[in-house]
Image (cartoon, rainbow, N blue to C red; front, side, top):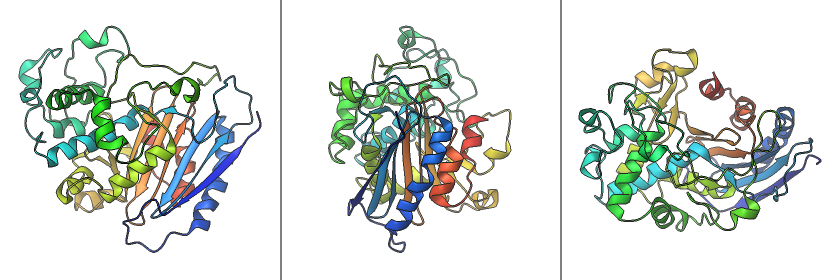
Length: 371
């Protein structure tokens, strides 16, 4: 299969930024710098959108190597979004906060049960804010979340609640139970009402849609072996979202603009909550400027800016479901952002080169993710 670059341009989809008008020629130039990086990383399918204010430029890049898959590898192709599931769920929670359905600082146990947790006293203090900022002290997973054992597995705390940053899918799954109990509906039903329908994300779902049979891509490991589509047995707010770059960029613009949120909730979701030292016992250089807001990572230009309480330069999140890797980064000052999806275990090897091409400066995200 030869390398193919498909570029499409959408204009007047989004706007709410006061920065100088976007330069479409500059965005197109960025798309010309990315293909060689994708090719070097041997990524089967790289699907992306770059946006700035009212302009969105996107496309698909296919590797030169021959890969064994038959799904259409174009802008309609569907990927596992992995942890890019979490920001959409955080946005849903903030919409519920605006309606008074849930409170960020009320213990989650007031909305749902505490089953599966070993330490009932500790779990009783967990709040939605702790979940969304990853300060619950919970592990990422008690066991593989797609396993048969996961629904009844015992969850043990890794750190004391609210003591430090500790990235946790279990926390999101627990808050999901509360949200579903409050609304009396499934996660995907809620997401469809709150996000997918209003933002015209017609190809996006936390569950499996019939059309995915033919357009959801297979994933490939580092040995270039086809590992299949990887269907999940249940909807999970932390990792089961499937989508494409065009759909997800609509959500990012809504998040950036505060669409559907009160001014207070828009401020709150983007406000840094905790210094995101990824491994609590090992403070690495790449941790210095990374903080976490409510459902999204935040990145400062330097640690002094963070300590002064200045606004972050960037917001971001990565997705890693093994053979599916994804990333988004956006910069509020000029409303520029990029989101990409890959069906390859190699998908994060290009984070630095892609973000540097997009924003013109080196960011510590790849080191934070991979080291």
